[in-house]
Length: 331
Image (cartoon, rainbow, N blue to C red; front, top):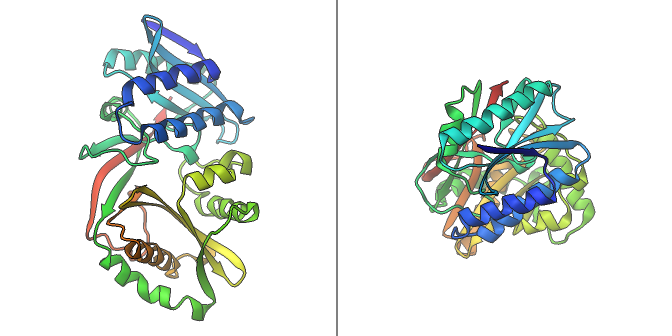
């Protein structure tokens, strides 16, 4: 079996992007997916905190599969990530690559492997556990269902689950959030749309993201250049709603268009000291109210942790169409 070991570099990037093009070129939003994937490869190449080892499978000198170990010096000692998982539906190939990954990890002093993640949790790549076979949406990285089967049968010590769902009727969420929204002004809060690519506003959005998500599974504290630049942030969002208390931005929510009738609702982040006070419901109310006014027929809630405990967020009328998983393995 032709197994080759290298690192993520320009040559590797070209080969894996070619593999993706062969597998997924007929999928809706393929160009969007490929551009996001390329950004993550570039992140791994350019970050001074990251080194990589790729284990790739070749047939007739053409890459047909890969798993990459991602070593980030900011992770807990003894931990590493694995990602850029692209494989044929062949258990023998998977086993050969996976055993090589485990051996390299042990030789490098790694005791816990987490993934599949491309680059970092800020670029998270989850494999599909269940699906209704509907089209992938923008920002959802294409993947094969059998990846979950391969990984879940390899004795993980932990499985972290997520889902994506959609709602076509907004009345329930509007009813829950209206009271909180109507009280904002009297309590000194207000919401406005971000109307410029101000570097200072973007920095504050990044600061809020870091504080809000720092306890997330496998979190690393990326710097401004790694996490977002203005073009990355704006290209990934149609609207950023900013939540203020007086002159201080204390939260935000990002949404973007999937198509002319569908909005993707991806993030609510509120500073910890303001959480649990209904402000998340107020932000959600504003998003849904604006969507209704604009004639949006569907809102997708993208990649929500199964244990997400957003207070009073109504779940009736939400159709879950995809479930995902990430794993931890004892090496």
